[in-house]
Amino acid sequence: MGRSPCCEKAHTNKGAWTKEEDDRLIAHIKAHGEGCWRSLPKAAGLLRCGKSCRLRWINYLRPDLKRGNFTEDEDDLIIKLHSLLGNKWSLIAGRLPGRTDNEIKNYWNTHIRRKLLSRGVDPNTHRPIVEGVSSNITTISFEKTQEDKSSSEESFSYSNPHYRIPDLNLELRISPPFQPHFEPVKTEIGLGNNHVGDSFLGFKKGVLDYRTI
DNA sequence: AAGTGCTGCAACCGCAGTAAT
DNA sequence: CATTACTGCGGTTGCAGCACT
Image 1 (cartoon, rainbow, N blue to C red):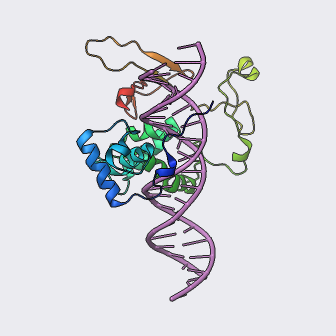
Image 2: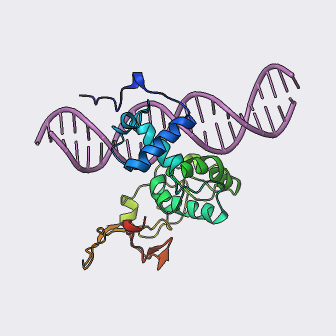
Image 3: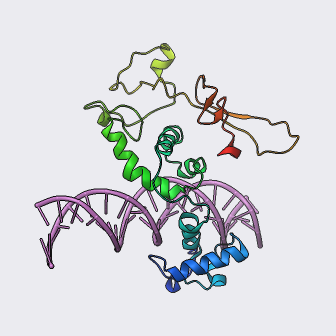
């Protein structure tokens, strides 16, 4: 059983937003606040679907957006966060005030990806690109292999499919939302033996507190 | 000036997660 | 519990603007 479309597509505009549409959307959200995107277009007198309105507001019209070029610091932070989180653009955006996930995603694909490649770094794995190697690696497995079980130490080889990246040693701990006078019970997601620094990217002691993301 | 290719970015699409019924 | 409705996310596309020939 399929889902019904999010809006009546036959009667909605598509493509670039006009100044008038922007003004209507801004005025409506200023008056009524965000939320209930599905009913917003009708209430605001817009011939757009709710998703489109939400996207336009979040990515372009929000007053707290920081437009303009990314700084070197932001570049570095994005690279570090991407190496930690992967393509979790919304999480990365959460660490960069005034930036949106869409903006960061675009920036990554157009600038940073190229920058890393020019430095000889694979933007997907954040590892140095070695001639004739990247095409051989297709899978990273966290499962213990037979070789792992028989020998804990294994010499490095890109062509060895059982090789496990030695420095990929992430620890993620998720704690419950903040509550006053509440003794948190930490849920740990272990990804191996962990020796995480005291403060990596602001995740203190390797604890990923999602309130700060 | 016209044609072509490239780049950057706004917007769309489809899916997953989750709340509501 | 099953179904429906809605929101949010990530991947992808389309197009305007620019550089180059």
